[in-house]
Image (cartoon, rainbow, N blue to C red):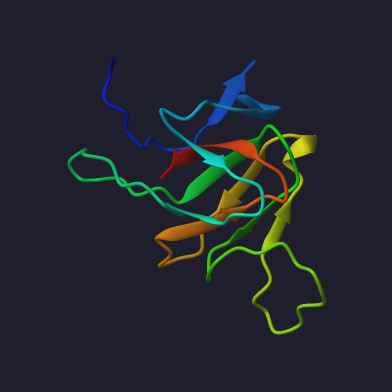
Length: 126
């Protein structure tokens, strides 16, 4: 098995360089988290062993149940009331397909929670 690396996300061109709409290359670095219902888990954005090391900044997140909620600024929570101070988690409708996110600058962790038990896969690119 090859050592996983964090590669660049590049368009997939066909027919004289025109990008195929909606098609992205599969990442070579893929992690999975198994979430218990209602329990937030922390995920550290990976850095590979290449020289120079590549740090993940683009993520494609998918889950076998949804929605899931993510937070780059603290512990993810499923909102039970209005949150109007900028600290709410982001709802990802992974039941509609994978979601592509760019991690905020200077962020090393992501918190993930789901109201139901699920498996979350995270593809990482630089």
